[in-house]
Amino acid sequence: MKACLISQGSVSSKWIAEAMKNYFDSVDQFSLKEIEVGLEDDQLKVMHEGKPLTKYDCVYIRGSFRYANILQSIAAAVQEESYTPISSEAFTVGHDKIINQIAFTRGNVPIPRTYLFSNVKKAKNFLENHANYPIIIKIPHGTQGKGVLFADSYASASSVLDTLSALRQPFLVQEYIETGSSDIRAIVAGDKVCAAMVRQAKLGEKRSNTHMGGEGKPVILDEKTKRVAINGAKAMGASVCAIDILLGAKGPVAIEGNLSPGLQGITKATKIDVADEIAKYLFEQSKKFMKKRNGVAASQVFKDLGIEHTNQEYETSIVCTLEEKNGNLILPKEICKNCNFSPDDEFEISIEKDQLTIKRVPKE
Image (cartoon, rainbow, N blue to C red):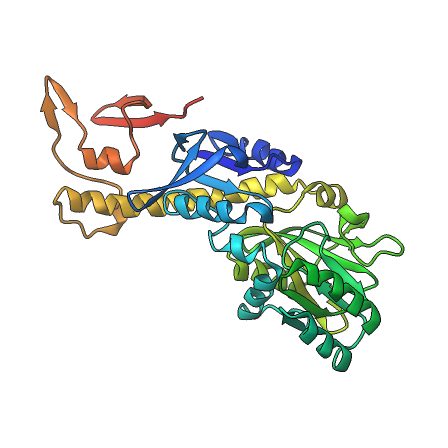
């Protein structure tokens, strides 16, 4: 099987691509900045440096919130033909903290009490009369702890809001949950938490992100916390991502999802090869996806050939005659189309008695 990883070229992305080579027949890596998406004949088409992207069995797309629109476009263009662990819609949900919280709520994933504002004056009125301090104020976009602000009084909150007013964008206010300035980061792959660590903020800092100086230590999650992580990923529409969780007095609550998490910190803390866990999951899911897709394609081939077909057990087997041309037997074009065979491809042909197997050779 063939796979590709489209990213901004981070260390974590390179780790994952290398791990994928242990499972897939071939793995290509592309820079997000070299990718274009065009709309032609009512179809989205992905191009790499001006040339159409080769069809892959698996396409894993990673990138920051700054590229959310093109990330979503790439996923939308390839998700019908290739296994993509992150849905196109997830790139909107995962890169906007406000929409992220709404998705968690709709998915019955517990979150801190959260209030959304687009007007500083209204927010100040609420904070002066109803808020319990301290509180957390967040802007919609930001990674690595940036855009997350702490206020321990109305005066400090008012000062923060005055600063945010210059940004002219909505923001959210969340209750502060006492955890000793720590949180949990869980890496999710499908219905499994691959690895989890507790991140402890450095002295004098409320943000526990490792990029902000936080220290990571391995942790074994209880079932309730695992479910928060797994359900949080599902609510976002992502099979592979990170979910950040606070363990407060009332139990675990999800505070954020990350579609392109860094792996250095959690790999070092847990001693788990997280990149390999992700690669293995991508391979297994790609096999399932292609088996299902090929089954559907085979049914379409029967239909195109005018063959009545009701036995689902032999959905990928076809009995038909072959056209002869100049002494050569020609495969039906419907079969070549649904197998993605191209005249430019090279094929490995295995011959046994009464049996011929044709397999496309992956390009170097």
